[in-house]
Image 1: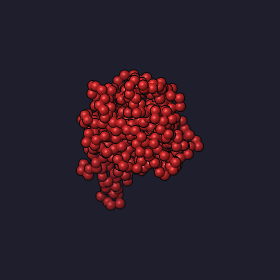
Image 2: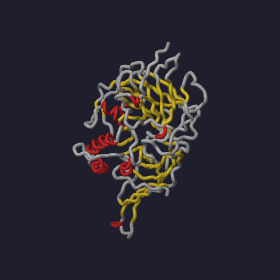
Image 3: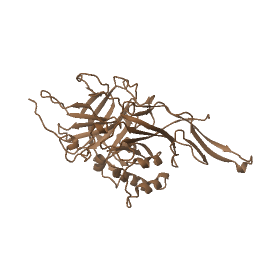
Image 4: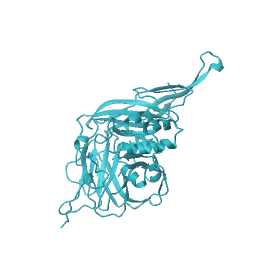
Length: 425
């Protein structure tokens, strides 16, 4: 006899971070049931779970019920390809170098850190499967591993958040190669902010600590300082002028989406050691939809999902050079200038089955010591005595094909990509 328990899903569990007034779970807002195992009257699963996928934002949200009453209060969830020979470019969102359909890391590990609300409660993780790859291998499987975290020797260098608040209101989402250091990856990864006000808290602290940098003054204007904060109701409008400092964002254009991923320089400072347990639980998830029950060694997708939203196919090529011009022919009148422009429009793919209409794709150059150029279909840069760009920011504007319930109908995706430098015009 299998004991039957009635359990509230996390969106209705008291004290859970996903239990918000406007539930982030409805099909009208892009969510579809991807995987599930609650057992049967004759067989109980080791760990009951279900997973939702947001086709508008490319988020895979996996929710595990702690039926084994694991005594850890903090957990790390890792998601990686089960077989590095059966993959696709679906995990490119968080990668800052190998972020293209023709060049991605098959050994990539995505991690999500979270604080569980109680023993016997729900443990969850959000993973960005934003990369669209129409040629993804049909045999692609993702492996999820759950580990407990010992954070007793970890020091958070922040006055804005406690570690518990970080793991509930600004969850670190990291990207690293297999075997990479998790603490180092967390300091460079994106954060899933519970609200725009939580994002603003981090931005204020970073701005105050870096007031001499080009983005420090902008942050002071838009979010204030820790002692004189300004209200920030939505993140998207400030991102365009801060790309370069902000390396990626995906959310509502006018109204914030629940738990928006945002990556920016210096967003998390911590030191010490993060000790992980041996895997407490693992499962394999097949991304290809196939009619029929689950094989004995992995879970099949429950719906015919076309994963991902957007990807660049290849690394863009940019003509970039420092030149000298002598308008009068006299040496004292000569001056140096920086020049850069796209040699060709970048090649990209957009998922036609995501339920989205593509509105526009524009580009801007980013720099180390100055603000980005404006976004346009063909950006160029000319600056006397200026510096060369160090990245190409891509802005993708989209609109949902059907009205949403709680989420903005207009979405915006920002990501800074590396480019290939050409010295030939």
